[in-house]
Length: 115
Image 1 (spheres, helix red, strand yellow):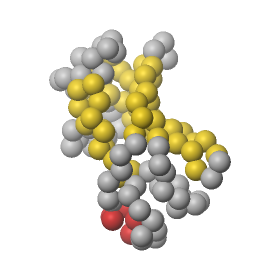
Image 2: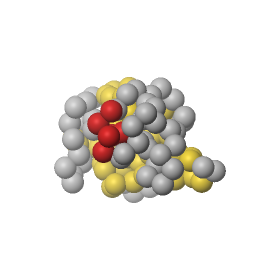
Image 3: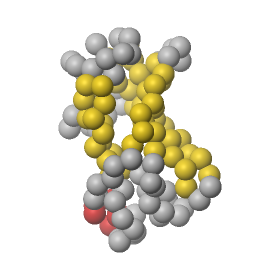
Image 4: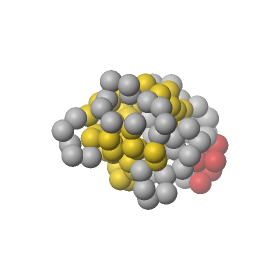
């Protein structure tokens, strides 16, 4: 979700290059709370990219309940990002993290259109 707007199969068109990306991370196999993750922006033509660390986590009891992981810990995030250094265009968002010694990339083909 970007600034309270859900992805719906098409790029979210942004008016500004600073915004909040929110979501959650909880590996289905381990239910192990992730301590650090990277939010990645990759230009649609893959000629440029950027990533920012997520290291502050917030409560998401709805996720814990849905995943049957009550009490696992804080799995949500709301990360302010400033991408003013990125050129205009469509960028794919993905989330990279490690759990149980395995690296994962969560990619649901979500896109933002930067002005």
